[in-house]
Image 1 (cartoon, rainbow, N blue to C red):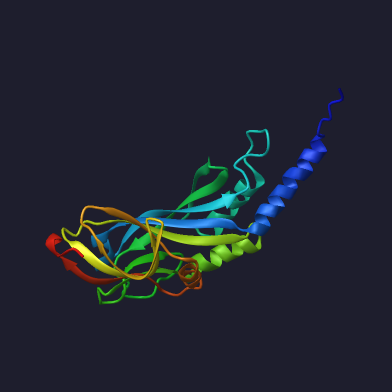
Image 2: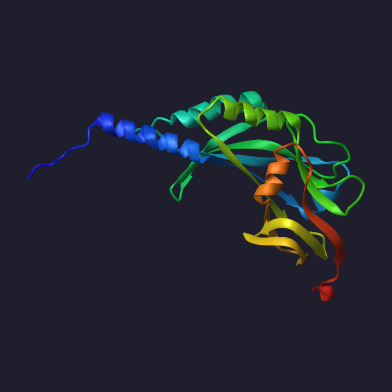
Length: 230
């Protein structure tokens, strides 16, 4: 019986082809922040750390302990264009790998446009009617520079993990939003006090966010006692 062994050159070509395919398919760039409900309405915004997880073909070069070229590239470039970003490590799970960075997010009332490399999440203006997300121009241009200089093509997403701590239930309208992975379109919902929800912007809203426009996450209708739940 003759056994055919794949040469190292062929394996290298296959790995390079896989990398190219993944790059063409687009790599997820997931921005994820956490906040308490009450923080969204505070007059003086607070700075918290959020995460930016960028999908890479692999954390390590094949059959080695060396970091992959994609990870090394992002480690070198992200902190240059986003000076406050810090590399946290590479995580691999469920056949995907991501280079993870921490980056500051400003949580609180948006009384002025989001500036610099900030990400801003909170009530819009002096009204408590809507909660929005916005990105400063330096954050947006920074990601564009990284994408333009690398083989990676980003498919961004924006997620907010929200803890309800108002002491009352909150009635909202979700114009277009995934809540705990369930799609909602102009849905009227009640967020119960003491619970946590994961809110993810859909593709159209995410595109608006990454174009530098303030994007509505949800509309607040009213706070209500528990006995008035829908």
